[in-house]
Image (cartoon, rainbow, N blue to C red; front, side):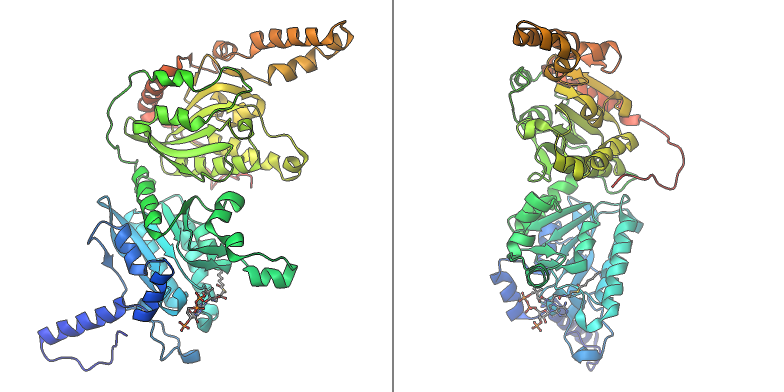
Length: 523
Ligand code: HXC
């Protein structure tokens, strides 16, 4: 271990050799056998993760020689290189970032006073310099030997997470155990990437069994797939550390360094030629499903987008992409899942994404094909009112440019929740297939012509006639266009050009709001 009590050499060369020796020892973390065990589990070491994440040779470590000051329970003799966390700064695609990486080979990566202080100081540097903060979590949690000092350390991390929130992007990479209260640190960041070698839960399988009697494996309870498909706690699943780093780098490429900047323009190619393929994706029949990601891919640069929470609340798609080189956040109903209805989870997913984009000056683009909020007792009891309200709130609060394109259905409250004109959309376009109405023609005709249908000789014939009548009158884009709710009804092939032009036009958008400490978003 790095030792302050060594006999110092008498020459500069000797001192430099001593320094190198101490550094080699620190870099060995918990020692060869523990590093080996880490690799055998398919996990990289704390330092390998940082090296892979950052541009080569850009890592500048800070605090390698830091030591804890605990003496109880044998800690005075314990070997704790870098106090179990590697911290510092470097670059990704040439842009500065701050990083921390827990070293599981050193006391299980457990966090005591000094480890937490190192992490918090790194976060403070991210704040001061306006640079993103990325943190690899791989730890047994609070260092038990340090008692309340460990808890206090976590408290300081949470506080710092919140301080950074909305100022610099924070990305958590869960690469090993992350249990108990410790999991609230990643939960307070903007994005969680989780590898399939990792677990995250508040109480593990053993505690759950003893308290509730439920039997569950660690993977079933808190593996990456469970968090992606069931709890919705994470944003990306990665097969392993290498894949996690690729996701983190790609994600960062879409984001600005901080809330006072805009994301970098990447390869703007000014290609606004018609995308004729767009005319063939959305079926004209409202009952037919399709994959809205095909629409997104046709419109965004190079067909390239990064889907966020791709495995959860799949009835809505949230993704980062670029249009003419400019980063946008895409929110799109997904008609192939639950007909694209909005439900509790979809509302939460969208609201979180909209909030993030607004915090970091990323324009929002909506693709709307939504029949309504999902009906059902469970949805009502689960609080669809307050969850759906989050979307209304997030869109209304967002002052970034907002461009909405109605592809097909846009009914009732869900039309508003997908950012219509009244919720502040700067540009609204509708395809000729759009049906912007208070509800679908079938439902509408059944309500307003109920008596007529019931008393008719042939109720079904009258019902069909009335549905047709209502559809022709209201379920088109033209009534909305006549009221100024839609700027233009467009050929689908022109969609990319229209979005690109609107983003250009509203790039200088300024929308002051009344001064307040902060709003009160429903939760
Ligand atoms: C001190 C710890 C530690 C901890 C692990 N170690 N967790 N040391 N404090 N929290 C040490 C082990 O003693 C061991 O030391 C080494 O790390 C590796 O641990 P193993 O158990 O051998 O590894 P493994 O079998 O992979 O199991 C990993 C584990 C397990 C599942 C994480 O270590 C574990 O259950 N740890 C305790 C988890 C826990 O209860 N943490 C405190 C929670 S309270 P040696 O010397 O043998 O290599 C908490 C509150 C936070 O976190 C609240 C914040 C608000």
